[in-house]
Image (cartoon, rainbow, N blue to C red; front, side):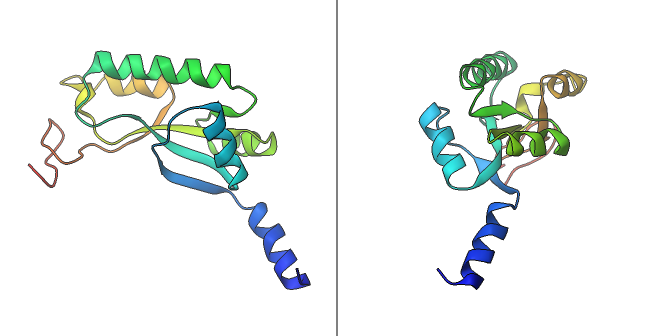
Length: 138
């Protein structure tokens, strides 16, 4: 490897590479492969579109369990500071996100609860219609 290529490789390895739509199976092996690919953090689609609140909460509980079981490989992050700390520790930062807000049903106040649970990215509408808008197929 020439000097230019080596310096580019070093610069790339120091960048914060964030996967904006992480839909992979949450396993230790997948966390390790993601880290090996140079990814520092992921926006995890934690709940699928058209999910009700009970299913959403169950999915989040499973996510927290899986992350706790793999604490040396993954960590839920809620800020840039936490993402940076996870990257420095060699741990995959997981940003909890969702692709629609159907699970909120008619209670926008649940947004505060979801924020307390770590959700940081929320797309109001996916393809269908919900209280918050109309998707491409509505």
